Amino acid sequence: VQLKQDPFKEILVVEDTQFFTNLIRRKIRSASDLTVHCVTTMAAAKAHLADRDQREILCLSDMNLPDAPTGEMVEYLTDIDVPTIVFSGTYDEKIRDRIINLGAIDYITKESPSSLDYLVSVINRVTRNRQLVAMVVDDSKTGRKYLSSLLRRFQLNVLTAENGEDAINKMTLASDIRLIITDFAMPKMDGFELIKEIRKEWPKEQLAIIGLSGSETSGLSAKFIKIGADDFIGKNFEVEELFCRIQQNLDNLDRLHSLHNAATTDYLTGLYNRRYFFDMAANMVAAGNRRDSPPVLAMIDIDKFKAVNDTYGHDTGDDVLVKFSDLLKKTIRASDLAARLGGEEFCILLADAEPETLPRFFRRLMEVISTMEVNIADQVVKISASIGVCFVTGDAKQAITVADKLLYEAKESGRNQTIINLDGDKKAITVPGPEGFDYG
Ligand code: GH3
Ligand code: MG
Ligand code: MG
Image 1 (cartoon, protein in one colour):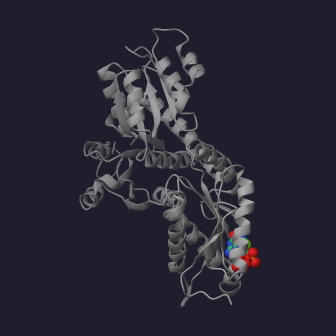
Image 2: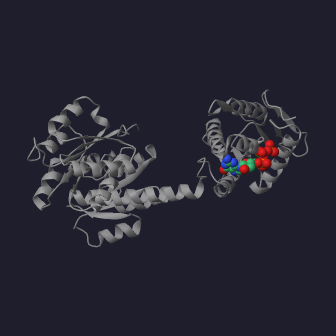
Image 3: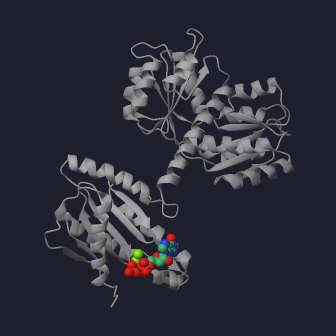
């Protein structure tokens, strides 16, 4: 299902107080990559919007402007479907209701400095929401329509389902759903059954679930949570509360995601780190053995990398490592694994590789590496690598020792080459790298 919207490119700030505009501009620039454009009147905002692709703009607007004294600006923006967050100098229930009823995403009061932090969190949330898919599960058509329209207002991409069964089917089609809001009482499969089914395959780290609890059954809310939902909301919720709960739950998912990334990947190159590599390798080896097709392990070490650092500096060395890692990622398949085991030592694990294709694969990899260029001043840095290749049938650590020995042989006998030995008894195959590197 292709439902993702265009990402935002720009934030349009419509605000007539110079002081507040400056604060906002600084705050947003420090927290987001979006271009910030500021205007002080409704006329200027309209002129600016007429010149742009409105689908790429998020608008922050004051409720009252010199040429729009009673909310006309916000009315205009929501009319033409530009996602809008409203600033309001004063706060009371009536103003709040007016803003939300107009169709704005949320509002921020100008009174306290902490409201700017909240503003940034809302901007980041709606920006990310554009890339996320949510599903509304409700047997009532009106209920589905209303919730979907609100989720779309919060910039989420929305799928709907009429009952639990329908929802499960749609989950398997669009596995990138990150949020489900589900009713309880539904024909075929109710909300509880649905949550139980979902949790078998989609853990809390991947997907947030919010239960909709009416007043018809007592203890519904607690039961939702006990069964595997992350949160619940009463059926006659306020729009503002729904937005807060969605924000909390999706922000939590993001935090879990960054923790997971920090724990499993190398910060410089984004490749998997040593620890995660061994976890994943164990799974790949088990899966490979079941198919009678053990994965192939290659240890890769950049040749004379110390000289790159010594000649061009450590930062250039880092650039080389980053570019080299990007090449590795691009060269392997999605089912393969690439990791940085340390320094300038990398390894890849190939699933279902046909042994006879390996010499060609590594020759091509070495060619790709040789064409890589890192520019520094008027110089071009080029590198080669040495590679040792073997099968992994058991423990990945043992296989690494074997591949390391082959790699060492490749270094000793001239560098810029791959030595493949899939079966310890047979003679190893040496694949030379491309011309142009001479290590004496
Ligand atoms: P060989 O061909 O025998 O592999 O020679 P080499 O110079 O590549 O190998 P050696 O192990 O002697 O040196 C590896 C160098 O990699 C030394 C170290 O400073 C550098 N290095 C390790 N990690 C990093 C890093 O994160 N960034 C940079 N820029 N350099 C690193
Ligand atoms: Mg090296
Ligand atoms: Mg080394």
